Figure 1 (spheres, rainbow, N blue to C red):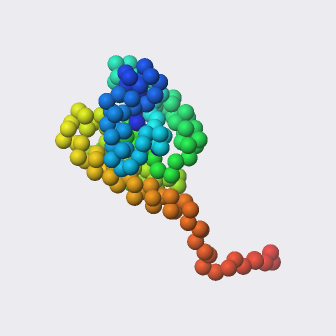
Figure 2 (cartoon, rainbow, N blue to C red):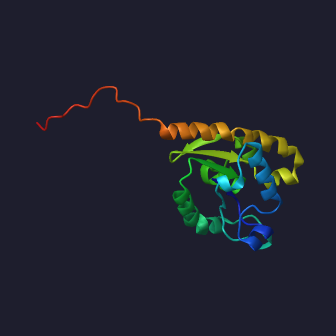
Figure 3 (cartoon, one colour):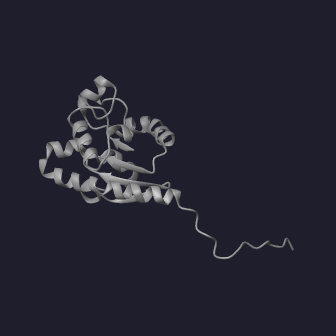
Length: 166
């Protein structure tokens, strides 16, 4: 699951996330690691385009939080990739994206990876190599999470003992 910020102009017009220039780059990044768009779930922190394409406000993100929670519950991803600082803040708090991009956390039994938003690489071409490098880590993280999900639970060190009531 990839979680972005909010709909831009093209996303708002088409009713789908990541269909503009950032979406094209996201599709290229996915192809670079052997995935297609139809193999991943893509959504946003806020579901409506903020006026003037400004950053989403805290109350807007709070208003959409339950919807996003339900999307996560329905999709039940093993790996969540946050694209940009607004989705990253949900899992990494007040950290700066420049400090935590590419890092992994376990949250509620899921692997969460912080990444720059593809639009950042479009606006700052110097970030593109970093974004590509971070994406290159995803196949191994996905493989590891799939193996962990299918691994049998660890055996108990000693068999359980029946306790006495007295």
